[in-house]
Amino acid sequence: MSPVWSSSLLRHLAALAMGGLVGWLYDHAVVGLLGGALALLGWHLVNLYRLDTWLRTGHIEAVPDGVGIWPPVFARIEYLRDKVRHERRRWRRLVRELRASAGAFPDGGVLLDEKREIVAHNIAAERLLGLRRLRDRGQRIENLLRHPDFIAYLHGNDHGPGVEVPAPVGGDNWLFCLLIPYGPHQSLLLVRDITEDVRLERTRRDFVANASHELRTPLTVISGYLDAMAGDEDLADLWYEPITDMRAQSQRMSQLLDDLLQLSRLESGARCSHERAVDMAGLLQTARREAMVTPGSPRQVEVEIGSDARVLGDAAEMQSVVTNLVSNAVRYTPAAGTIRICWNVDDEGGHLTVADSGIGIAEEDIPRVTERFYRTDRGRAYHAGGTGLGLAIVKHALRRHDAVLEIRSRIGEGSQFTCHFPPHRLAVSS
Image (cartoon, rainbow, N blue to C red; front, side, top):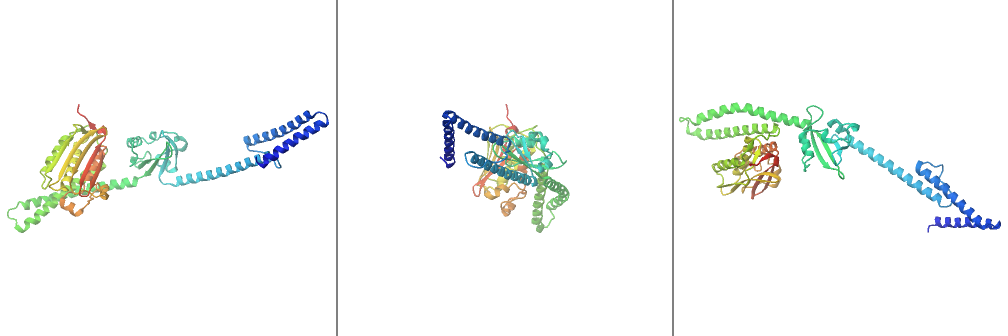
């Protein structure tokens, strides 16, 4: 037992003994004991009343001093209250600092609960999304940002890459939205203004398209003269080889312009419609025949058709996807190698695979092979032909069909390119 309680117990016993002694002197010892007990009870009730008032209102005239059990109790409560006040002030200061830091961010941040309802947001989110603190708190975010791409991204299973959507306010502004987990059953929506990037990309596409159109006319004239000179029987023998090389380069430039125009069109277009069903089996068989007649192509080009399902989209773009993947495999696979072209469908969707036993791709180059003009081996790729735009065209054509490109490869072990189409892009024959 603590010294405070021991001394308090002794004082209570002394008070009862004093009451009993006074009552004994008057021949009423029991009455004296009861009087002492009632006095002690009254003293405790008064302190309990003061404690209750303090806990309810937080105000008391003075913490009692002296001896007994009640002064330490009041002092302990006063200490705990001061500690709570200090912690409360510290947390309020921390919250103010966090709010000031969030308010200074140039990117918008919106805290969402498990129902995608807005819990809180910073000042940048108000500017980018047109949110209002009192009006929009508790609203579902898809009711305020209603673009179909954002809604599909919000309810998808994978929130990794983010999505680009037009801003709900600001006219021609564009936003990049990224959803990340934040706390239990919550998520944080990060919003960044990418208007300048989109405008620069649009300017670049317009420049490429315009430049390609302007170059096509003089290149056609040059090619025509070179063809005429090559067919001239009176041409000196010493000019035959230079003209042949110039014709090959003009054809390569013409193919480059065609690819640039196609890539520019794919980049500037929206999602492809679902109106037409593309015969994938027919495209694969056509690609095989074209590969077999290509000079230096591998002797084994196999086609495996595991489903008669068709892809809903644009036939020309799907043909471009298949042709570019197969021609890419032909260029980098030796004649003794093998190319395998497969089309299969499962519960996750359709899968177009072009695998080869060629030279392969280094692991560090795989993320960049779909970039424009990127070559893993510039010298060897230049002599193999191609414009360096084939895989970029494939990536953007697949994006218009809601599909993604998966690349697996190792140096010396060949490459495998797989196009994954979602189920809603498939039409199964009945």
